[in-house]
Length: 298
Length: 320
Image (tube, each protein chain N blue to C red):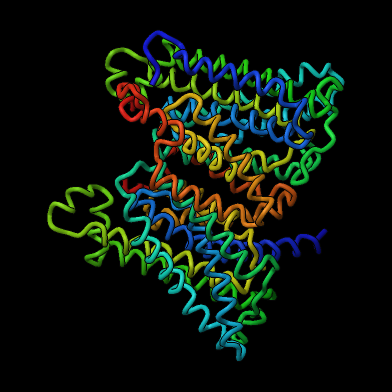
């Protein structure tokens, strides 16, 4: 009895850590989604596909460069920029012509992008599972307090706050962030004072997609890289953004923590139904606060 | 789009009766596979028409319509497999379950509008999906339920086809009457201007809620038809991708037309089979079609042809 309780205590902490690092990934991806949703008011369904693209690109660049851990670092550094570049091209060539259409059309357009990405990935990378080893410096575990902490998870944990603060700084302290927040509230007014709103939207969209790519590249060493990645993630990211409040970076953080932790803790309580817990929590939160826990931008 | 009183124009009546006759005799000419495909197109058409009641006529962003379809299918499958009640009760209970779920989800979501409505519904729907996806002991989890004991009368391909045809035609007639009833008019008035409708004394929320329940009910009927055709139910029926595909079907045929979604579904089901025969990249083709549609044909196929029609007063664009 005593034995089992100690197991569960350390298991609890370890599960907590896994949940936290999962939350970090979810936060990075969904903060990008939240940014796009908050400023452009577009539910970007293709966001999950860009995340998947980020993971595949990170894998490919890493194997192309090779040479152990440098490959991974190069992949991690380049993949998000590749994703951002793809999104910039798509935004300028196709998306920017649709901004005055109904939201539903924009949603369907991003759905078309998602389908396009899915088959493009299938064409380029095939349908096998890929896996990528974390760099040597981050392999293995640190042991502390008699427990093992995987180094890569700690690395992810340290990155979460960096992204959060960086994003907050970008939206609240820089000029483009302030313009973007103003454009979220009243697009026409911002245009009337002589700011090129179209380019503001483009840059916000690209930053959002960059974050999706970054999340994908970061997740690559922790799980199998496969075609179903986009599907599961986009749903979770949407729920996180909705409970957090649209366009609110801290809301995305809160939502990601709620989602990741209920998921990982749920496994201890009721393994078979663990995936149900986060969804149930989201629904309960939304019944009481249908517009999200924190303040939305619009 | 539709004249204030009259039901159909002569041309439409003629077209519809020809279509009905063709559909009624089709199974004696077509190979089994095409009969099955036709049944599938019909029930998908019913499903997207029911979605269009909420989406096109009600103006509500019903993002997760497939949930009601899936619940109808699971309702009847579970009743047939796990109980010994007469099969008819299962076929009646399926749609009723969908309607109840639509009522519950509607009460929660109706407080919000547009995109917020859609996203709240999306999260509620995905909760339902995930429960069905995981509840192995009851719903079969991700495998779904297979080998549902369908009553022998409608177990054959032809039998299930005629069952689907008759039920679909009846349901389409009822939906058509609903859309053209005073209630349907009020619903469209709410879509066009909720504030003004409220100010002349229309109970906006109540009317929208009724539309959601009706849409859910008919989606449930499409669900039981699917089970009678396919003999199985699986979690993909409730998937979000399917919901989005249904929206595409509505878009394809035309939002603001009654028969548009039916046409769109038929085209989509046909295309999927046709393209699927040549290439494994069906989703790529779908994506390109969708993009072309959004750019060049936002009113849909039927909406486009109606717009070309002789009487410019009848264009769907103006009806918006």
